[in-house]
Image (cartoon, rainbow, N blue to C red; front, side, top):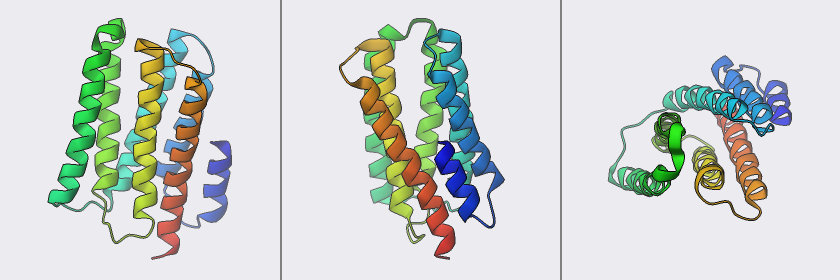
Length: 178
């Protein structure tokens, strides 16, 4: 994440301070999640929640009313995500409220990524990044709360790194193609 922050700062002449702050929250979240402790996990969760809201406000700047295709696309993502949350619900224990708030936040971020103006350059980069971020967090949640699986850490990191790369380069790219 620090490399992407450096890339953003070095290439953006008109930096979006909110978006930059979101990347810093992501970096802090990365650091907190390195520790195997519930308090650090919650701190990391909170940092990523703040990152999602700063990204959401960045995406919302180019909001367009969803057409039927966009609404169906998001509804499909929403229903799959709700099914996953319902499946994990019995395993969440005291984290139900935290995970639910996070769930609403990340889906809101994905919604505003999808409902951006499709004519903006790098639209699909940002949307793909937001969806990969959702997948990364879903893999992390399944592994942490419900069903540990081999190579979870690798899959989480691959999807997370790709997600952040696509979002950051998409935001930078759209500014250079105005």
